Image (cartoon, rainbow, N blue to C red):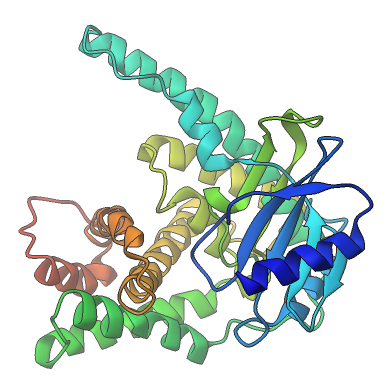
Length: 360
């Protein structure tokens, strides 16, 4: 309570109008966000980032770096000693919410054919939104300056992936890796890191998923879709594998689409990346394999992160999203021979008996 009072006092010193604050928004980190509504109906965002657990300098520096390349919030006022920022409000409709609004309520009266037609229409509408986002992802990778960026190096990748063994396998499942399982894990980890390091390097957002992409305002003077996608939570951006953000977007833990739609969107991205001169393979088949393996990297890392959020930080809601990651992993690992050791390990850890599959 004392901290929120300090925050309100600081805001009063910065603003000339009365205002109200929403309940906290977001819960995956030690930062909190509030939506601030002014007396005239305009809104701002407020970041509360206790300095003992957060460094605001990376956020401020990255916001300045990305301005002009993509739509990110401006820092309107700052109080670094306390850990407060006043920011532009880029919207309260994120991509997840926009996509959910497209999906009609289930109608049991529809025939199988009608349901399939409805699903095709839904995918066509979703594709429009995703193409819009992909154009901004390409702009981010092509236009944002990369000088002086931290690099997503091999050791950091190993450390990130090791959360899977420590937090998911050991702490969450109660199955510490040893013997054959440990050998399978070390082999898979080495492959994932090597393939990630071999990819072309661009600026990566590092958490480019539907909840960090804002597409418009539901209420207020700015109601409606924005002209450009608003990108938030970018403070961990770095120089890394070109497929990382694309895999985060199209193999999202919070929303799933048929593989046919993902394939169309990967093609769209690859064509745009080639035209922009970004470092992607000339062969689409080679690029798609890079995208798939980067998706596996991302899902393994995310399983470890979600398990840590649940068991260390008490944020158990992330356990509900784990089955999506497991589903993606099985789908991809089953079809690539080089990923079969990981496929075997995942199935063993989750007591899954696979059926007949196909491999590349």
